[in-house]
Each structure stands twice: as C-alpha cells, then as structure tokens.
Length: 625
Ligand code: C2E
Ligand code: CA
Ligand code: CA
Image: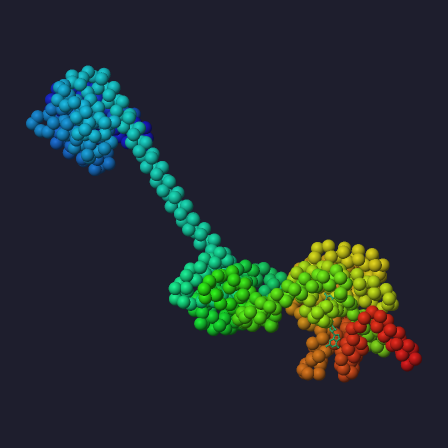
C-alpha cells in the first residue's frame, strides 16, 4: 500500500466454516504478514483461525480481513468501520446465512451505510436475478457476483481488482474533495479581494475619505433617501488655500501630512451631517445630508481649518475656501450640483481666501464672462488691439530717468479699458499667456530701440517663465529684434522661485549670462523666505507698493523699508521703490538709501510716443535747470 492511500480492508460473511477457510487461504496471501493487534481482534476469526490478519502498512494489497458468519454481524462491522473512518473496501456476502438475514438484505443495509464499498454477492443458487438484486441494493457499478464454488484464482483476481478499484475511487474522491476545497478557498479569497478592491476603488488612499467614485455612489444613495423625504442634498466644495506653495516650498511629505490632517478635520467637523471625500490634490467635497445645516457645516469647516497645522517641527498656516450648492429638487444630480459648487468656490477664492460662498446664478454669468474674456483676448492678440505703456523709473539722486517699465493695456471694443491684472489672470489659466507674453516681448524690444540709452523693464508671468525652452525663446526674440540684452530688465516674482527653485535658478543664471538684467518684483510680499537670495544672483529688488503706501498710514512701515534696503545693499542689489505718489514718500526713500523710484509722482505709464516727448522735456528742463 503506498503512502497516503487508505488501508484496503475486507469483510467476509459466510455461515459455512469451510468456505471461510477457503477465503482465508486466498486472501491471507494478499495481506502483510500477520501481526496481532489486540484492539482489532476479531472474536470469530480468533476462534476459527487463532488470530485476525492484522492491518500492517507494508506493501500488501489488503490491509486486514474480517470474518463473520451472520448478516447482522457483517452490518455491525461495516457500521463500526465506517464510523471509525476506516471503511471496508470489499464485502463478500454469502447469499444464504441461516438462521439470520440473507445476503441480499445484508447488502441492502450495508449499501445504506457505505455507498462506496464494493459488495460481492456470493451464491450457488439463482435465488435472485441480478436485476432484482441491483434494484434492491443500488449502485450497480459497485455490485459484483461470485459463483460458488469459486476457485482460489478467481477469488484472488476479483479481490485484487476490486481492492485497486476501491483505492482509485476513494483516491479520486479524495482528490476531488481536495480540489473542491481548493476551489472554494480560492473563490472565498477572490470574494474578499473583490470586496477589498471594491472598497479601495471608492476610497482615497492617502486620507481614507471617499474618492471621486465613492462620492458619486454615496451621492446616489443619499439622493434616493433625500427624494423620499422631500429633502435636497447640498454639496460643499473645499479647496485648501495656498496648498501648492506649501507643497513646493516645504516638500511633498509635509504636503501629504497637511492633506491627511486636513482630511481628519473635515471628517470631524462633518460628523453625522454628511460624507467627506477627497477629489484629488487639495480639493475636497462634503455631501451635506442635513441641507438646512449646510451653511452651518461650512462655517464649522472654515473654523476647523483656521487652526495652524503643526507638522513635524513646522507650523503651517493655511485656510480653506468653500463653495456651496444645493441639488435641484426634481433631479438631484451630482455633476450639476458640483459644477455649481465649483463656481461658488471660484467666486469665494476671487473674494479673498478663507471665505465661503453659496451658489447663485449671477456667479454663473461671471464665469461665462471669463470665458468670453478669454476668447476676446485671443482675438485682441491677433488683431493687435493691445498696447504697451511705459512708466519712467528715476534715480534717487537728481531724478533723471534711468529706465521704463512696460505695462500692458487693452482697450476692449465694447468694455473699454481692462486692467492688466483682470486679463493676465485669464490668460494664465487658458495658456494664452505664452502668445501674450511673446507679443509683449516683441513689442517692448522693438519700442526700446527708441530709447537705447535707458533700461526697458518687462514683466514676465510665472507661467510663461516656467515653460521649458523659455530662455532660448527669449534670447531668439531679442536677437531677432536686434536689441541689446544689457538694456533689458526682466521682472519676475517670487512665485517663480517657489515652484521649482533649481529650475528657476538655472534659468536666471542663463539669462544673466546672455546679458539680461533680472529684477525681483513685488518684493516683501512673498512667501518663499529669503534663503534663495544666497543662491540666486539678481540685479535689483523692487519693494512692493504696499510698503510705500503704508508709509503714511501704518507705523513700522519705515522700519521694514529700511531693513529691505539694508538687505539689498548687503547683496549688492540696486533697489526700486514702487508706487511713489507723494513728496514725503520720496524724501523718506531718498534718505533711507533707496537707489531708484517709480510712481505717479515722477510719471504715469504712457504711450511710447508720449514717453519720447516726456523724456525730451525732462532732459531739456534738467539741462536748463
Ligand atoms: P506691477 O509689475 O507691480 O506694475 C506696477 C503697477 O503699479 C502698474 O499697474 C502701475 O500702473 C502701477 N503704479 C505705478 N505707479 C503707481 C503709483 O504711484 N500709484 C499707484 N497706485 N499705482 C502705480 P498696472 O499697469 O495696472 O499693472 C498691474 C500689474 O499687472 C503689474 O504690476 C504686473 O504685475 C502686471 N502686468 C502689467 N503688464 C504686464 C505684462 O506685460 N506682463 C505681465 N506678465 N504682467 C504685467
Ligand atoms: Ca513689475
Ligand atoms: Ca511690482
């Protein structure tokens, strides 16, 4: 018997001792050498033959033979063996076993106990037809006949064949059971991982909040519920203020932790009143299921987000802007509700940060207005409706004009003059900025040749500056126009540095190598710290106009200006104060050591022709004065 196979036990039932003796002679040869086993001791076989052939896991074909002389005995043995998990492989049954039940009845009952055992009906008379026996016992494929008197070879062959067949059947059944179990386990695993995958598919990995898909599903569920109760859902659309700056300047780990902490606050503030989701980046949404409390929920969210974040050893201060919109009563549709909330969010951000706005249809008109503005601007660039004005910059000593700053002007055919900040923003959002920026550079380079002895400053948008290949493009434009790069000053803001300091530093170095001057515009207003001043060489700082404005209103502004001037000097940078409107400002700035000034006091932005005339008059005035 090979390892893993089950012992092939045999039961013989015949009332005739001589016949049993005949069985014994044949079957013994098929078992391993007898070794007595008290527990398996069979009383009858002991009485007959002195001992039972013991089960021995050698290479024997049969594991042990049990003998009995009555049908009921045989049934008892089968029952016992089956209960112990050591069922018989073959049962030989004499047809007639007086005084007890006959072989047919015995077979019938044995089959009910053990469906797999091979039953051999041994008979010398045709008491029953095989068909009758089959009908009574069942399982014809495991029912066999042996005619009495049988000879030894016949019995041996039958026993051998049936024993092997039983093993094969049982083995197959076991194999099958194993495979079924494996399949079931696999199926169960698939089901769990499917459930996990489904949960993962609706969850945001970073925060554990719902993701976009999850939000959609939850909205549908809540919309059905709300519809039954005659309620309208509301959606709050949240956007972390200045998240990109934090991420760029403090690193992605701090950014991720900020997002996680923000998510925790949203979840806590929302509580039982709705469901929070992260839509990606720093955008979040909350479905408010208690619509009357949506605004209150919004206020809670605003407040929760105002508390500064402590991440590692960093303290990060950021607020949140929120747009709220309610779903339509008839058709509660997430996409439409989100679209409105997005418009409200856009309006909230435009109104200053840390603000919450609820959607109303006038906002939609503003948005449509923005889109129209973008398409009008595209036309204006092609149709040459734009202009550059030039504002003088003067040297603090003696006030001669040492340069001009080019400032964009757009006179819209129906809307009149549009200030640059109103349309540059739109251009940056729509990618029009590159076309627009090129236009400004070309025009400023061309105009600057009318005043080659002074510097022409041009403002660069961060979006324009960050575009790969920008330096080459700018150098090419300058070469094409024949302008001397040393007379061109490029004004950039700190925003450029925040996004990718290494990239910005590289570009600034290349531009300076090509001869251009670089001014850092709106200085003091920024967010990037001052560390970059050690790494990047500029030519000039322009103090933001707000500081000059504050000179009159707020105490302390003079101190700030003095320290900025000191800082500029220590880095050997020249310095321009912007927005000088009053004599007292001029006098203070001169005394503070500010090298250059710009403002309405010295000249407003004007057309190129006017500038040429203006220079002529100031030059002659100075010459005669
Ligand atoms: P900026 O670079 O700070 O330009 C100076 C702004 O201050 C100009 O506003 C100028 O008209 C204004 N200004 C100058 N002196 C005074 C003063 O004494 N008092 C007051 N109250 N204001 C003064 P403007 O022309 O409206 O331009 C606004 C901003 O638009 C500019 O700020 C600049 O950031 C941007 N900008 C203008 N032209 C361009 C351009 O060609 N390209 C890019 N990318 N941005 C531009
Ligand atoms: Ca400027
Ligand atoms: Ca400025």
